[in-house]
Structure formats: C-alpha cells, structure tokens
Image (cartoon, rainbow, N blue to C red; front, top):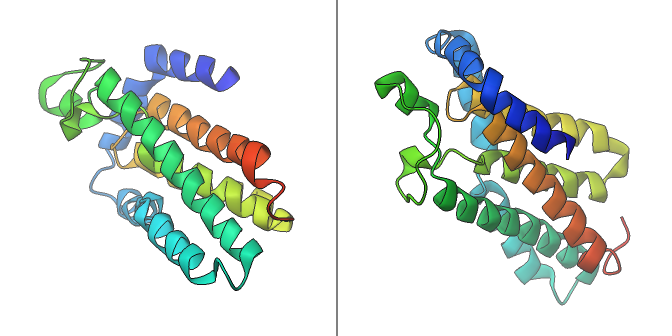
Length: 190
C-alpha cells in the first residue's frame, strides 16, 4: 500500500519534475549508461532461456527445471498483468510531454506512446530478481539492488515516469512472491 501511495504522490507532484530533469541529461554519459542497463529489463532475456531450460531438464533434473519454470511464469504473468493495465489506462509516455505537452491518461489504447503505465521493464526486472533471490538467498540484496537499478533506468532514459516504475516494480515483486508461495514453494527447496 505504501508503494501505491508513493506512486500517487509521485504522479501528482514529482513525475514531471523528474522527467524534465532527466530530459536535460538526454545527451550525456548518464543517459548512455542507463540505455545499456535498461536492456537488461527486456523479458526475452529471461523468458526464452528459462523456458528452454525447463524443456531440456524437465525429466532429468526436475527441481532445476521447476526453478526455470517458476522464473518463466513469474516474468510472463507479471508481463501479462502489466500489459492489460497498460491498455486500460493509456498513460502518455514522457516523450509525448516533451513533444506536445501531453501528461496523464487517455484510456484504452494499444499504441506504444500511450502505454507508459505501469512499466513492463520494471515488472520484468523485479520479478526476475525476486526469483533469483529465492534461488540464491545469500545474494538476495544484490539481486534486489540490480532490479531496482534496472527499473530506475526507465526513468533516467525518459521511457517512463517514476510512478510507472513504482507500480511495475510492485507488480513484479508481488507476482514472484505470490507465485512462489502458492504454487512453487513445495516444488523446490531454495
């Protein structure tokens, strides 16, 4: 609930100011570095390998295969949830603010420029990093930090507003935790 309240406050008071600040850095080194980091939030980096690992090892190493399946489902389900919300809410991306002063929502769109809320990269990054933290609890904080940096990269490169990233991250975290608790916890021991 705290993240939802923070996202609402960010939408009202901070999203535009943060976007304007990072827009002023668009040709700098920070932007270039975060454009590289943001690529780690693409779901294909997780979905394809995890599905292939599941297929290859499902009969030979069942627990290993179940971990891969869990990772696949965590990223896929969070992505599906995010995409449904994106189409319903139709939030303008920051680029539309800088091109035409458009800020806010225009419901029910499928065009990329109207699909800012919530951030899919953030959902992917956090769902995957939570899963990795379950697999390797000793490095849980490191994975969480990496997920947060990947999610925030979306704000730095002006692909999303902070509130988009907060809610996308929340969806990723909740999807991974709930999926693990409800279905996968008994299938493998971390």
